[in-house]
Amino acid sequence: MLLVEGLNVTQQSSYPAFILLLIIYIFIMVSNISLIVLITMERTLHQPMYILFCNLSLNDAFGATVIIPRLLSDKFVASTERYITYIECAVQHFALTCLLWPHIQY
Image 1 (tube, helix red, strand yellow):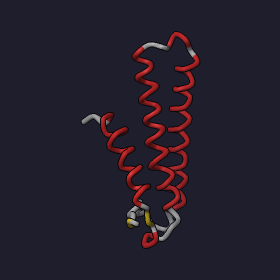
Image 2 (cartoon, one colour; image 1 turned 90 degrees about the vertical axis):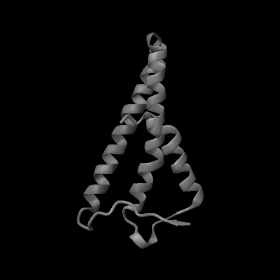
Image 3 (cartoon, helix red, strand yellow; image 1 turned 90 degrees about the horizontal axis):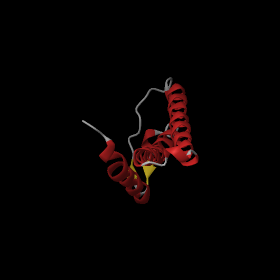
């Protein structure tokens, strides 16, 4: 078990931070899933460039699903009780290093 820092916000701003993160997560998922559905349904978009876009959207949706729900669930837990198991930590590390890290441009 590892102790997780999480987002350090005040008690008054915990609900707005939760709502903002939830809206961001919903927007990420709706936009990425709709792009994936559009590319798979439209026959003229079955070209290498659009398959790359589909892959990027899939990686973004997977990465957001790994990170953001954990942030949302830890928002209302006391900072001394935010623990993560080794398996959850390994999954988050895999998602960040293998899926999201190569797409970050400097």
